[in-house]
Amino acid sequence: MDEIKPDTPPEDSVRFIGMGDFRQHLAGALAQAHSKLLWFDYDLSETGINTAENIENLRRMLSSKRPCSVRLLLHEGDFLCRKCPKLLQLLDIYGNSISVRLVNAAHRNVNECFLLADELVVRRYHNEQPRGEASRAERAVTLCLQRFEALWLEASPFSDWRRLHI
Image (cartoon, rainbow, N blue to C red):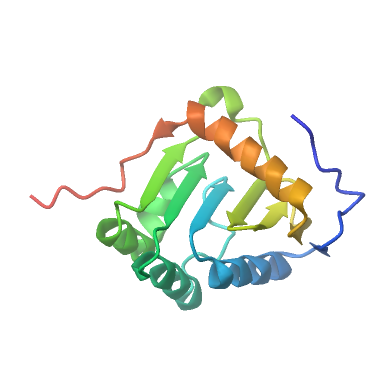
């Protein structure tokens, strides 16, 4: 699979070098999303997903009249289960529009993280580094989409977050 080189950002992209910038670009992407979120991350712990603004933007997208889908692809699910009660509530309410899977063990060495929100990608080059870019460039979006779909096909469904309501 082609890689986007960190040294050569495509047109229509903005580089960031800190976690604050990364979270700001993620929040902006969530605010602009209308129909599709593909989110590949280690465990969501560095994303700021639990902020009221991000949860409200997800709720807005999921409750709109338009068809939409949110697919979360994670390396680990513990953070989601233990530290994301508002996101779990959205999963309970909008479970028909949200899917969560865990990366196959053979792909645990894939270290990048990205959020693809419609035609905008926010990407960190490595999950332990804050450097990355936000881009609308067709090449960046296409490469992340291809990477996500390839990993998704081999990922395992994750249902530890589901409540039985017994």
